[in-house]
Image (tube, rainbow, N blue to C red; front, side):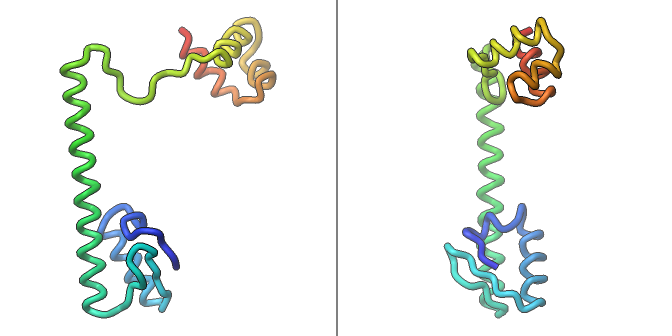
Length: 126
């Protein structure tokens, strides 16, 4: 098995360690492009545990900073809205106008999109 980075291997340290243990028991070689081959030795297991713990800590710190930034933005920016800005481009406007005089299914077929997307665009322009 080949993985680009160890922190992309699993969501958390425990999950990664369980996967690595299972793969090593099945004698499947694990190659991490940024690290090398993971071997089933005491030193190899210690290095993997350490690197996975550091990666999980970094992810947790990113989440904490992101949440703190959102709180700051809510407190200091009355126009703050979480997520991507709504996209009101000319194509969506055309879909909205078309859907006002046609059914959702007809609009979806005419613009080669799903009916759910048409419904979403209709909500966007309300």
